[in-house]
Amino acid sequence: MNSRVPVALEWSETHRGHARHENAHTRIVNFYGCLLVSPETMPLERHLRITNLANRRTISAIVVYQGNRQVDGWELGVELIEPEMDFWGIDL
Image (cartoon, rainbow, N blue to C red; front, side, top):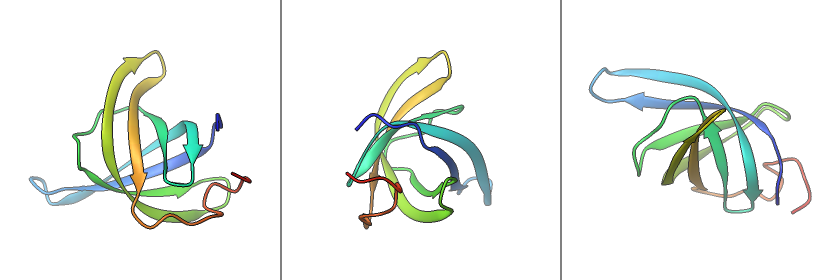
C-alpha cells in the first residue's frame, strides 16, 4: 500500500561502537516491511530499529534491498523481523 509514514531509524555501527539515528519516511508499507527513503544508504543485512513517529511504536528490521538515490534520499527495502498487525497504524 502506498503510504508515507514518518519513521526514525536507529542502528549500531560496529566499527565505531556507537548508535546512529536518522529520520526517514516510507513510500510503500505492508505487513512484512516497507520501502523507505533514508538520507543515508545502508548495506544489505543491516539490522535496524524502526520507530513509527505517528504512533511511537518501535520494531526490529533488516535491510533487504538497496535502491537508487532519489531526490529525497536513498530507497531501501526493509523486512520487519517480527511483524505486528498494527505497527503502521493503518488497515492493511
